[in-house]
Image 1 (cartoon, rainbow, N blue to C red):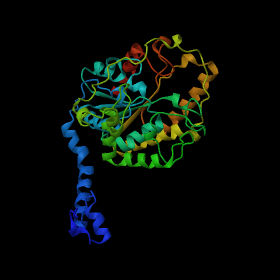
Image 2: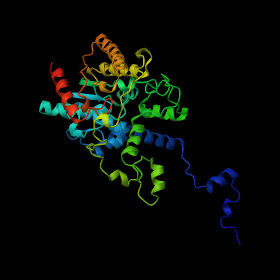
Image 3: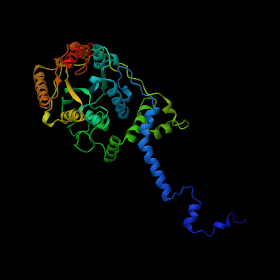
Image 4: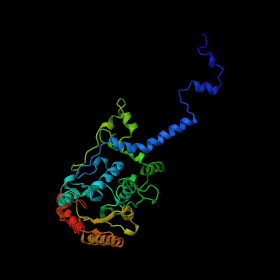
Length: 372
């Protein structure tokens, strides 16, 4: 038989390989075009997606529980809340409302007292001060020139372990919001490469937007977020763009914990309160205040109220000493603050979370104080 393509027999080896390859060979100008297209996508995709994705925060909105790690959506909600409400409530699950529905939270009770939607619930589950500082620094830029009520939860100072100072590995909430390199966190043992990726995500909107798509749309049967390659392996015959047609989860109105008084699930206990001078959580709370003030916000702080009913008399005295030191710093920084007395014992679900009746009582005190 004759050679099917005798004209190629005398090609140099490198050209013969290229001729038989399936690769696409681009010139320098073409590579430049590809690079510019990629950069354009990275810059514009998050902004364009906001035009596609319908996001309407109804009254008394709070972040869906399953999207507690969706910081891109949180940033979007911050900007919307700052536009339409007067006072933004920041903090952890006490502000979010762990043992109540969204129509029983502190922000709802304050809105009911005001007769209109003046207060926004920007609480986030598990947002300890280290995480909250990162949340405000990288995803709270939409909060500026606003009245902000910041919640201080003493539970994050209740032990060296919760303060993240112990060198034993401790799986704490929101590690993607923590400082990745400086200051060092003894309890944080993530490897170098993931830390670099988190630093990029914190500073590049495209990376946090991609994480948002994963959190909001690509999940397994148990609700666990999946990246797109994982999702396609689990659904090999489905269109990978199909999940993006779903609407965003609605505002969370579920009751996630059984709403019973703390005496039904806890015994009296004492806490080994940490020293403010060396506390990572306290220094992060201070940083949160400074970040908010630097952006022109008028910051007020709500101190507790902590459930002192579960503490011994001596431990209560130690807690009061700790809170007094916090008040001294706030006075020095000219930050208005309210330290209400403890709620009735039956109004607490645990050490720090009020039940529905507790939020109603607390809202009366907060509303009157803010009015003054």
